[in-house]
Amino acid sequence: MAIAQAQVGLTITTIVPKPLAGSYANVGIFFCNYHATNTVVVQVYVSDETGAKDDDSHSIMRDLTLAPKESYVLNVEKFLLDSTGGWSINAKADTASAVVATASYIAI
Image (tube, rainbow, N blue to C red):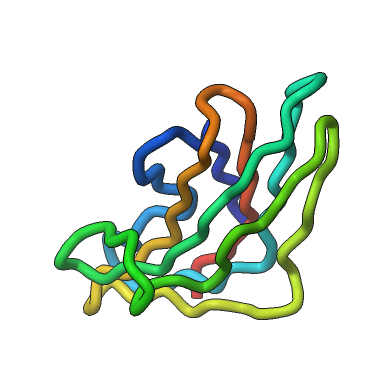
């Protein structure tokens, strides 16, 4: 099992990178708004090898609103990321330096 962590920025931020070989099974993603006073809105995308896209056709979660000091766990749906398609999971936020995403995944 592996863990990846990234601070979600104003532009597309990779949370689970595309596998270099084989496949990854995403187990869960945790989004934590560590800002003391600001509510933050996060967008989450799955993108293929053509690059990280922030459009409706790549969206898996729209307008996830995190109150100050709130966390959200995305653990119901599992994603199989394959090196052949170059799939990755990405996110962006409407506030810089406020949200950390932590993902757990396993190579299969």
